[in-house]
Image (cartoon, rainbow, N blue to C red; front, side):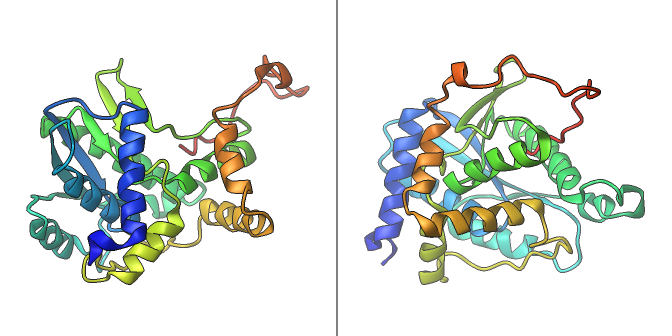
Length: 263
């Protein structure tokens, strides 16, 4: 049974710990949950739904799926899955995916453009639903990978945060899986396919991103020493500015910051 699985219980407790540590919820709040169809966002929605039974802070959930518009999509199947949880999925069909992969955007990152457009729609739909908070399924691994992507490809140190205020703090993004190792989700969803359906990503760039390259690099490090991941994660809250190049030192002849924001 799902509730007796050790990975489920570990994730369940870690979400509660993150919610308390970062003060993610407010009483009576309407929380939008961005779904991608991947294992992380499906796990997030189910855990948040299950935690409603014991949460001292009442909240309601409003899942959203922004369909990128590729052939072979799964919006109907995802809508049905949410219905089994007793939740109504808001689906918005777009042409973001094909447009981002079009010839006019050939020199740009299609994944970055598609993600940016999707994020804007998630914000807009959340507000239309009366939600001032949007929950996303980013894990501890995603936070670490974003740190390395920003360093390697944007020349800056920064990452996603568990709770982030936007639009003069009138809207918030929360990441309840911030303390969860992705491997636990992989094991959980693999052992219980009846609870977590597998949706095939129809995007032609799936598995060919810069994030995938960074993930593989980090996995090489993790295999050398099991403490490396936790040390990297802990270091993001233990920054010693006196030993950083601060204020920034610009290289000669480089007066502009052209790095892409990978958050």
